[in-house]
Length: 307
Ligand SMILES: Cc1cc2nc3c(=O)[nH]c(=O)nc-3n(C[C@H](O)[C@H](O)[C@H](O)COP(=O)(O)OP(=O)(O)OC[C@H]3O[C@@H](n4cnc5c(N)ncnc54)[C@H](O)[C@@H]3O)c2cc1C
Image (tube, rainbow, N blue to C red; front, side):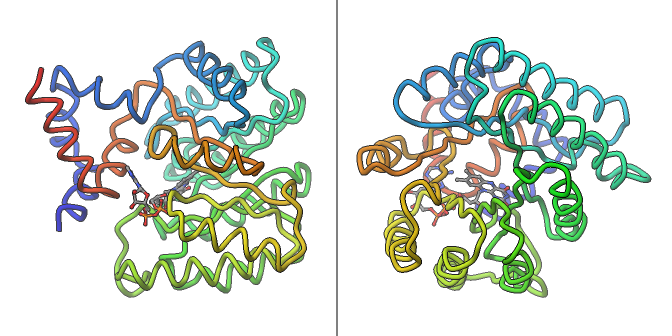
C-alpha cells in the first residue's frame, strides 16, 4: 500500500515539489546519490575503484519531454565520459542510460533516443567504457530492447536490462540467448498492472531464480543486480553449474543500499559493480528507493524530525 503510494508519488509534480522543498531532504538523499556534479561522480568512482569495485554511472533524469532537455542530458553523458578519461578511470567503467531521458517519449522519440544513445556509445567506445540501457515501465520495453539490439550491431558492449516481475521476461531472455549481450537482471522497480506483471513478491522472487538459471546457461554476460543474499547464493551456484569463472559474470548493487553485502562480494573475489547515480534531478530515483523498502521512509522521517 505504502509502496504503491510512493511509486505513484514518484511521478507526481505536487509530491515532487513537497519532497524537494524539505530543507533536510538532501541529507537523506545523500545516502543514495553521492553528489550533483560530474566532479562528484568522478570522485565517487575513484573511491569505489580503490576498494576493488567497478561502477556504472547514471546521470539522473527521466521522462524528459522537450528536445532541448534530451540534448542536455546527452551532453552531460559526453562530459562525464570525457571527465572519466581525463581522470584515468574510464577503462572498465559503464554508464547506465534511461532512454526516457534521451527523448524516447517525444514524437519520433525512438529515433531521437537511439541517436543520442549512439552518440554516447561512440564516446564510450573511444575511452574504454561500456553502456547499459536501463529498463523503465512496461510500455517502453519493446522500444528499449529494439534500440539495444540495433546499437549492438556497431557497439557489442551495449547491455539491456530484464525485469523478472514482467510476465514477458522469460521469452525476452530466450530471444537474447545467442546474442552474447550483457544482460542485467533485476526484479523491477515500477508499479505495473496485473495483466503484464506478477504482483506478489514471492512470485517475482521465484521468477528471478528461474531467470538466473536461464541467464547463466545462456551465452549472454550475466549482471545479477540485486541486494537479496538468497539470489546471490543462487547466482553463485548457477554460475558454477554453467561452468562460469568469476570473470564471466558480475554482481551489481545500487549505491548506498547494502555496502556490507558489496564488501562480502569483493572479499569472495566476485566482480562487484556499483550503480552510481548523480545530478540534481534525483526525485524519481529517490522515491523508487523509498518504495522498495518502507523502512527507508522511517529513516527519511527520522532524519527530518532531527533537523
Ligand atoms: C544495479 C541495479 C540496477 C537496476 N536497474 C534497474 C532498471 O534498469 N530497471 C528497473 O526496473 N529496476 C532496476 N533496479 C531496481 C530493481 O528492479 C529492484 O527494484 C531493486 O533492486 C530492489 O530489489 P532487490 O533485488 O534488491 O530485492 P528485494 O527483495 O526488493 O530486496 C532484498 C533486500 O535488499 C535490501 N534493499 C532492497 N532495496 C532496498 C532499498 N531501496 N533500500 C534499502 N534496502 C534495500 C533490503 O534489505 C531487502 O530486504 C536496479 C537495481 C540494481 C541493484
